[in-house]
Amino acid sequence: MSDERRTLRLDEKLKAEDELYATLFHPSHAERKPMMISIAIAVVIHVIFLVVNFPDVKAQLRPKKPEKVVYVKKYVPPPPKIERKQIVKKQITKKVPVPDPTPDEPEPIREPEPDIEPEPLPPDVEVLLGDPEPPPPTGPLMAGVGDVSNPVIIMSTKVQPEYPELARRARLEGSVILQAIVYKDGTVGEIEVLRCTRPNVGFEAAAVAAVQNWRYQPATQNGKPVDVFFTINVTFELQ
Picture 1 (tube, rainbow, N blue to C red):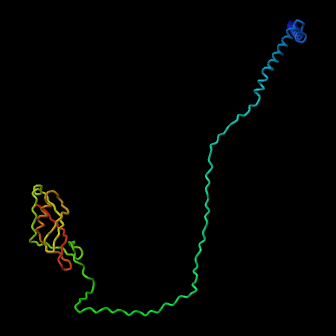
Picture 2: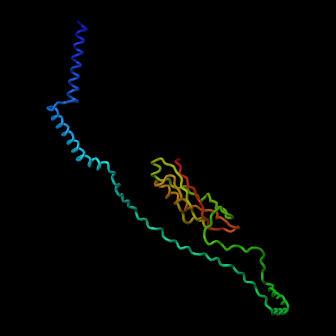
Picture 3: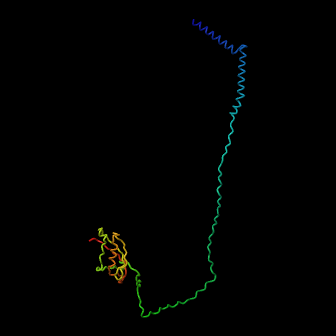
């Protein structure tokens, strides 16, 4: 039974294939007309496609012309012309002395003049040998400088200064440095306060009042008394 079924199925397939072949390659008159219409429609569609789209394709395939690019350059002025000056070297010429063809006249012979003898000095004129003495000073000298000696205090005239009351109450001690002019007669002239260890308590005025009454053996220069500037120190101590 299986072999018969197989044979029937095989026959059915063969018949179906024959009918399909006959339909495709040997169509009937009724089937030809729709087939021709389909072919004609297909041809018309292809023609329309070629006519309408082909120019666009060509246009797309055409190479594009390159766009013109304009470059703008900045104007740069040319460099100024430098005039070169020609340096002309001058040749240094030396003047050559031209000898004088005429000889010089000989100088006349001069006899030496006799020495003039000095006139003899009168017998009453003193002749001084060596350096002359310097003129006497016009103002006070500095004591102890050079050949100037220091004045010496006369102890009997050295009175003690009065102790200022303000400094005594405050129990203050100090000293005053003065510069005084000691004249050639031993008296004391102008006095200047140089320094005070305790200012503004009365030490300066008390020291000046006391030194004005002092007397000195005068300073000397070359054995002669002279006016000098002399530094004096006055001390104030509590008893």
